Image 1 (cartoon, rainbow, N blue to C red):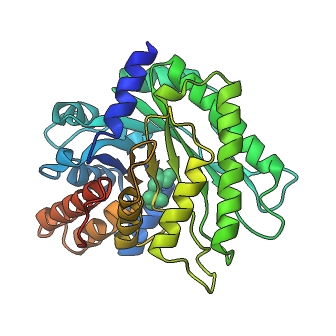
Image 2 (cartoon, rainbow, N blue to C red; image 1 turned 45 degrees about the horizontal axis):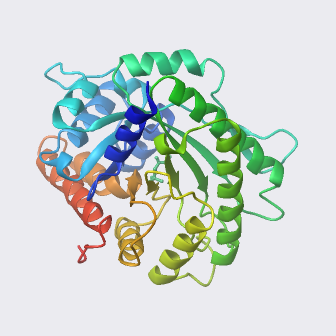
Length: 335
Ligand code: 13P
């Protein structure tokens, strides 16, 4: 796979006015999300729900690609069309979550390291054959008393860089995701310092592992106040802090940056993205790769009446996609 092809895929992922929908919840995570709205987590429910999202009419006007989970990449529409094939027909790029989740970092209480490097080359080979063209790996950084440590940041950055190099070898664009959690009562300045240290470490590790940035997408958290911080930074401050942090750590050659929603409300996630793009021009396209902020309203509707609310749920996910697509251009006018 040439770097030109990887770069082309990466650029298509952040095409003007478009972003990514993250529907790559593991069976455990989707089980929790379903349970919260009273849906039983059977394989057929998981399939039918992902079909509802992926086949929402005109979704591809605002969505360049979707991150799937292993089970979903192997599933099909009710008419028997594999989801990856359906997506390709609609001009949406199939992506796949390839990490195996987090585990406690031994010797460092309260800190996590992401697992999944063993056997990854063979898994990537198969995912490529199944149609995936990009792959996501999520590292999780907790903020708390005396954490994160440099050891935790470096261990996660190293794993992200090893996975990214393997992805490029196998023809998939790595979507490297370091998520600094919003949990805690830290202020936005602390969020800034931690995010800055994490991104510096990540780009140093990517360089050391010979990862070509032209064929890489960064998926990052925004710089925000901790969820329980008494003083919540407003939209403008979040936009300015996030942009400053990114400009001081992320090379301009990167084809694009997308954000996770991380527990922000649907509307706030859109407003933050819109504000950052209004502050442009920026060195890279800034777009979205939201999970919860794209799906939660649609999932709720579907849970209330799977057949009766099907179309309404599709309209709802389309409305989020349209709003976020506009925000990626700095043209959102409110919902
Ligand atoms: P959220 O937008 O719900 O944070 O999910 C995005 C994602 O893919 C996290 O890995």
